[in-house]
Image (tube, rainbow, N blue to C red; front, side, top):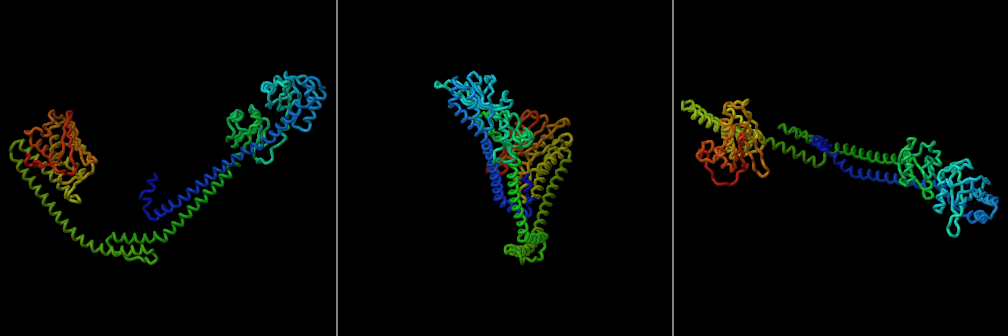
Length: 589
């Protein structure tokens, strides 16, 4: 399609070619400019996404500080004598409750502090509530006992507080490393929700807190409920550690880029999402502006090139073209005013005018010479034609004398051969160089001539001719034409007896090495003795001897196959090669 668009018709005018040149010149810097703009855009997109990851880390500061503070509180309590005494069974419960209350009172994030036995029973609570309860059914408690390390729970509902919390537990071990108690803190979820968004975050960003099961604990106000959260499958991938950054549409249909920051070894996850339209859209707008600017520069350059080429070049070329058109009509043009044209074009105009005058004079001489040669060629052609007609008429007169059918047939065969020679001469003298003929047209005329002379109607025996448009010298065309005449005449005579219908194929293929293959095939009755066709029998008929002689004259090789039908294949050189002298057609006869 591009080749057709940039074909000769489109690139015909010089103006379009100049535009194409300018377009190619401008295409390179423009292409590099666009590539640089796209590369800069991609870099900015990557920076914007990395900033989202940094914002997710920033958004986790509140929770990270809270966990650090929780660890510090339980560490201090673990070394407090009162708490140690309670764990050892020798201190007052009231003093324990007071110590726990004093430890968390400065921090509104904590709802309760507890000291639990390894069996899960509460020894004392900061709330003073001494109701019996057990923590053995809590996963976080069992993980503290079994792992011997601090654990932060997921969403937990505390019945004694009647509110949801996050439980932070730390084991207290003896000198042998055995867990003898668990210190627990209850972190209010409502305090986490009320603490608000970390300063410095984009106002349109949504910040959500998830527990280790993917359950949303705190949902950002920017989410308008839970609509800004991604689909459940993405939350599952987040808590399984399979996705730290991803881009998808939230439940409200808004496309966002999400970044995940795990807290406390994956006990909690900060999920921050920024709408793509606010994150990427400004960058896309900048990219579009840069590409549009480059495009306008290209269009402006092309417009300037078009106007400049019209003023400086193409209008003078148009005047030269008009002068050349007038010269082609055989006239000498009236000179245009080329005073403002470039020096090269003025010199070209002077040369063109001089050439026009010389062409006019030379044309007169050539016309006179051509007229003389045409007269001579017409005379030669007329004499050859008359001579061949005379020979044909004499043969017709001799054929009318009662001599038997065999003699009449012999006269008819000779007439066909003479007509073949006449056809060769006609094509030679009608050709441009008078030495070579076009085989495609010549062979088509020849086979029709032979069929007309045979008297076999075309509706009974159909001829198919497949000859490429190649040229052959007259010296090679004569034996090839006579050989073809003998083979086709033999096929019309003997291949379809008793008015039998059939087909004859005349085909030629030229090879790159200068060899050619002529194939003449019929679907007639065939022959049981191929050697009778190719002339291997020296006592054969005149036609057989002629076929053999013409084959040798062409320096070719003849092969015959069949039945069914008869297929004769002649392989020969299109150009003659030095060879030993062969008998002429008259001696073979």
